Image: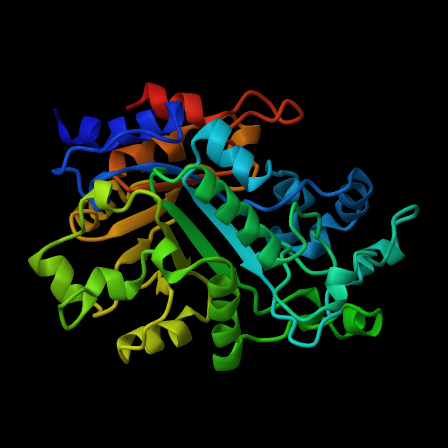
Length: 359
């Protein structure tokens, strides 16, 4: 069996069945490749919102281009069961007092849409899940806990599932951070993540998952002084020792704060996407595989690397598989997409079938 086949076959079996037998002991976790979804909680914005944003496209900038927002996903449990997805991404806004993200301020300018979320859970303290506050807010899960509960319930119903990687992106800004005029109209700044916020984020995870349900930095480090020592000496554990486990990995512009906890030896439930050769590095992010295939492939011998097969709707609209082909060539173990299934409103672009064909 060649290396590419060795990486692919577990995905194929995971896709065909959510509960299956043991893998060969020689297959280690970093020799297993999965398909992941990007902004996995997200629903498509209301067409009225997209139409309104389109009028101001030139002023909004690339990040708020309505065409790039026009995608959405199935509930997480359906992604796992129907499409074999084993990696997801959850954006979390910190709301320590409650009520911070109850309003959807853009709707002040869009006729026929409500400005407030009626669900009382939005008034309660806790982490909220949405893509861009006040702008791109449609979601399958209003709260982080609701998403965690769906994942936990599915995991317990499928106890032999292959590991699930959960990217957590703490959101530290919103449109209100960048414009005094928007703040005047009621667009709020995002509450920044600090050490207290990360402690509360850990606590929310552990309020749903038991520590034995997770694979944590402490589990990977084992008896070694650092994760780096473990990976250099023994490597990753066999895949069949990690069945039924869930991995949490912090991503985003403030993940260095969380990484500092790990570097100090604190026992925390989440890994961090960080750079090679640091003592706590296990996961590395390289979102652009095009022309970087060899460099990424070299990293995969020690780390688990996350990359992308498409960017929001841009590749889908052009039926462009070049990024997917580069991702597969790179040997990256986590390949993230917004199109595990096609969206007829956009076209025929669909990654899962091509992923299987190009094995």
